Image 1 (cartoon, rainbow, N blue to C red):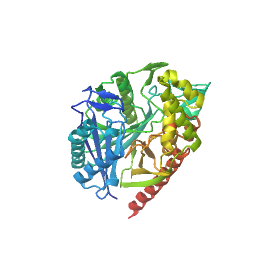
Image 2: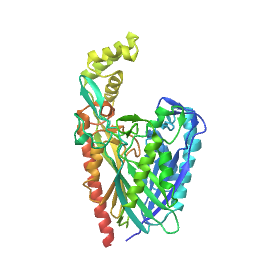
Image 3: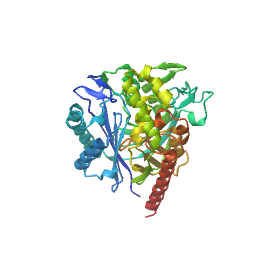
Image 4: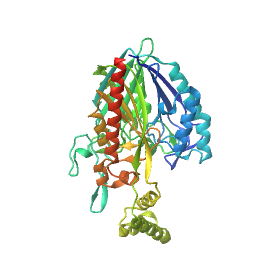
Length: 449
């Protein structure tokens, strides 16, 4: 059986000019550096590259250009390249790539050269894995449950100071998922490599420092986890439809201490590794398969109603607060909801959703282009063919939020942003389980050959 190798590289790509962040704020100076981290996995025949970027999300043009850079630099098949992000809102917003000169300049002059260097260095760093361990723990109090419920015609959010506190609106579906997962790849003569998988919304630093580029909680996270010098860590963002570091870091108090969130998550990684168990790590299988999702079109009469409400609002000359009665009267929550309804009417009937898996030994990893809700991540993670599974979001594009069926039933911001029909989250989870089962059978067959 082929033996697994792993390589690691990290390159800084902090901008040296002001950059738009999150579509609105302008990052003028750098508070903490942002990085691209590259993990190379190979068994001698199959090779995969996993990039974790300290940025918010990806436009289609950015992903295409990023992948082209990697393929040209390494010769690796583009389907074996996983382009992930940490969903850091305090980084240059590449949705403006090829639309705004300052973003294009940063991407092509600083970002892509760093990506090329990271890919080359990770492949050069490939070394045999001598031991693989996995561990889990719970990171409590870093949760803001992004579920919205109608109460007297208004939306409210349910926050949790601990993952299992009670609420009159709560159910098991609304629980923040506190589980952190970690893998440690041991290597002789080199630092070990750790993959950490957690679900947390890196949007806090933008509120605290709207004019600063930074890595949000990841700066402190890396200090805590890599302080010993024994290993380097690659953070892989999990499902994120319902957790935010705008935190319950202290019981029943909103707190914007994102460094504390980084410490809590970093300490969680160390706890998970301290109680880790051994895993097999022979072989490697990588697969990309497009799933055809049905788009969530809105009804024609609703679209026309939304257009009329927006027109009346715009002609009224009122600000958002004073003009809200126009949308209330028409049965809408906001001008933003009307805009989303109109834009969805222009969607194609279907969209291809790239679903990717990377599997080796006892471990399966799924990569989805969504901010998936924890419910569906658990659906993949807790009933898999592999002994240990990581679910990674924000990969190879971003199709906005993908709520669970329960999340759709409660409407709200995430359901409004979703391009796809209710039930797609559950279907995608089942599709991933099918792919994982196939990967397991393939690895089993390789062992007998």
